[in-house]
Image (cartoon, rainbow, N blue to C red):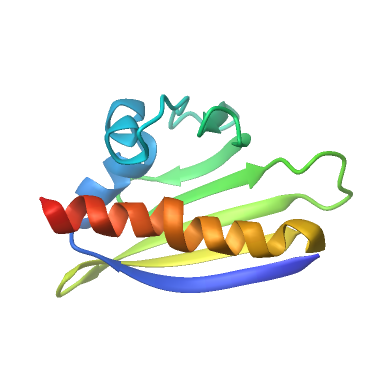
Length: 127
């Protein structure tokens, strides 16, 4: 199991970015796919046609999202924590992803940098 931590700068205010991470209609705009998402703790979520799925654990509006990501039958839960900080260029995003299975680590890191936060950077750069 491995952990990943990275900071991203997104050219959007924290409240706008929070909506982009939690509102299924806005998520579809930047992912290109339907999304199942709710800000109700304990609710399930699904992104990219089920390629990413899990359970929502905690939300602090415009500031923090905590999720459990599913990777089959692993003994320790894989937890994603996204913390949004105001930044002069919009939002500084602190990403922490713990307990990533070794065999999935490279794909997950590539996904965070490309399809997930890379796509958000592109989405807000155009706006």
